[in-house]
Amino acid sequence: MNIQYSKAFIKSALKLTGKYKAALLKKIEEVKDAPGVEKLSECKKLEGFENTYRIRIGSYRAFFILVILNNTVCFEYLVNRGEAYNKEYLKSLAKKEKS
Image (cartoon, rainbow, N blue to C red; front, top):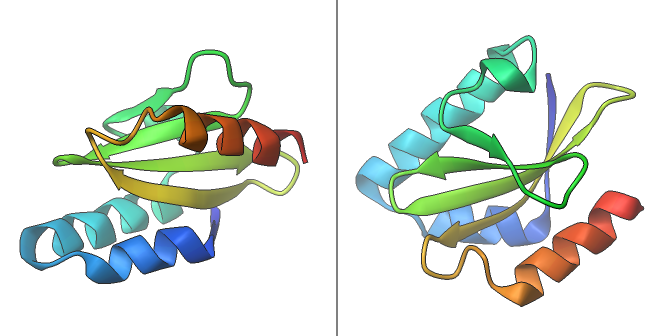
């Protein structure tokens, strides 16, 4: 799969240290090599969304939108588990998924 990153995702990823950074890199490689989103471990589709998913990386959640036409994964957010389902993030994801 092709991969794109939002500025917010990159900013959050650069703040990670040690085992979380290594786990994120490993998960990104898994996404690149996967034939489809259903083959990804720790990946779930968000309820109420058509093409938005989340991947669990320790105590962090990486949210991405799958663009089916060109088989591209657009990583949007990387946030701590406690902030992951904040209404602000979900509203932003819904808006980005429609565009």
